[in-house]
Image (cartoon, rainbow, N blue to C red; front, side):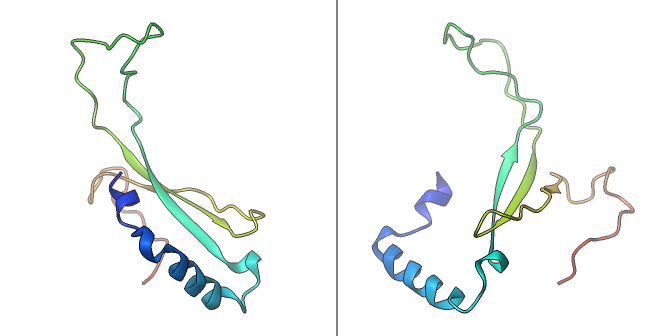
Amino acid sequence: MGEAKSAPLEILEETRKNLHEIIKDYDLNNVFNYDETGLYWDLEPSKTIMQNPLSGKKKSKKHVTLLLTCNATGTEKLKPLFIHTYQNSQILRGKKERFTS
């Protein structure tokens, strides 16, 4: 909900026009968009089939972030980028960075 509120609707049309102006000289196969989403991999259901809330269970906060990317035509989808929760994770320790600034 926080991300939805970050885009003021009053300037949406103007922003779209600006974006179209920026990408007009590019092949749409070379224009990419990405979005991130959280994956709560250890989260149990909050309701049963009967739609009753489950009691006595604390919600797990174990999650990772996935970055999903594809081009404007949808013909090329990059492999999801896995972003671990912890800055210095045991799993990622000693791994080389894949991207440079």
